[in-house]
Length: 117
Image (cartoon, rainbow, N blue to C red; front, side, top):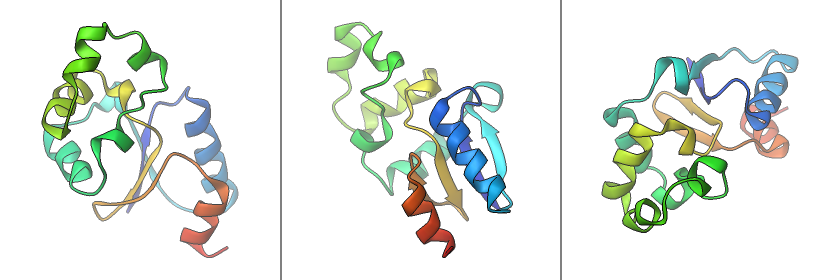
């Protein structure tokens, strides 16, 4: 089963969900805020993508962090506790199938390529 991870009120997540639904692609939505994330899931993602890609340093959650917290994040090991504590710092949406990240963020051309439409 394909899963889309994110936050429902995020515009990028909304675009991805709309695209998947319009193209009749079955997926399960995982709301970071309601359902949370755990270390095992994040470690699996960090084994596939760098922490620099997974941590959304352009988002409000990151920008609102005190500088001391930002400078403390220097690698996957230091990014993990931040992502666990503040899941909204994770770039979204994350589209996953069988534990493998298919796409980070939403790009219509990339989605179309994944689903050969």
